[in-house]
Length: 247
Image (cartoon, one colour):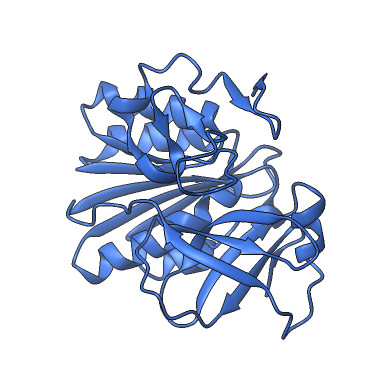
């Protein structure tokens, strides 16, 4: 299913149970393996892929019925106990927040969402989030829809307007750092879904090392209190060779 000009969702039947926040490794025969957060955790499951590199670009044109390899799910999950949740998604980061928000809403939680993208056609799962949220506000860098500016501006205002028990966020690390800063002013705990290089998903290859943690086994969902003391958070990442490069 095409979601945006650069994003598609692949749905597949896969028996192992999965929770919101977990990820799977997707292998396209003859190509690389990709770590992908589950954007649908029921039956059928699904991953939502944005074209970033050569392999992810090729997934945009996979025909229905293509054979792919799947292993997992891996990692931890979002805690669904908070009753008042602000979900802040940047770009394709909304893919992991949507199933978590749906699961929390089914348990009676109140959801407010702030979703951002560079331009209106790239906004992801807005209608899906509207179906389970009290309020959904959007921001676009170019002003083509919603707030003209960053989604962090919207999330800061929403935090000032009403109380929340938790903030869930996924997107660029610079964005998540700003979300954490705004939430800290209101003493609201933040939980970040992290995206890093992952090769083994078992904590062995060290590709996804982030400070003292491995994102694949210690995360991918981290409380902000674990991330903010790490010097590289929001500043650098590792490339495919393991070298640190600026974000």
